Length: 209
Image 1 (cartoon, helix red, strand yellow):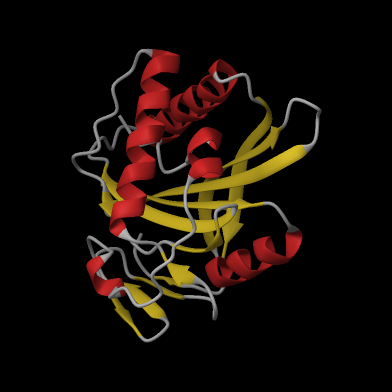
Image 2: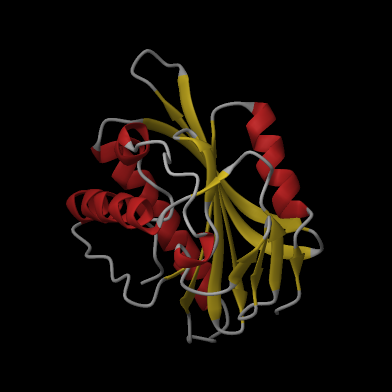
């Protein structure tokens, strides 16, 4: 099953701590690729992205703690255990607990026609059910989106508080590259920070296919 906990659930997001240590070695926070200065490069999928100035690389400990909480929420909502054994963390960075950029890869060897798209649809349904099980109202939409000349399956989510106010928006982009599910998740609560992350993503270079 394609990993789905990269779309951190609201309970996890709202109680995650802001990255405090700005002096972490960024290369020890990723499973694949390398950070040189303010640029991350994944040789595995041929991806290069610039880390926005002033944003902090997320620690491996924080990422793994958030994923465990997300996986548990998914398990309770859908009675489905999430296998994250093949998941590789690429670069993740954040400004604060509401505005963050995460990227991962996971093997997807099934090359049957439509298999990847069907899997994405299953993931989207599980994400929606997980939020609903926590009493969180959400609006979602899914479609194909072109990012820097590459087609991605995208899933957009808006999360609301009990009084109807928007508390968070999430964008999930997924693409099959070299039999791997390459996914990027953007969480934001304001348009300025969304633009910073989307500019970084849309200006990134992706050679794999």
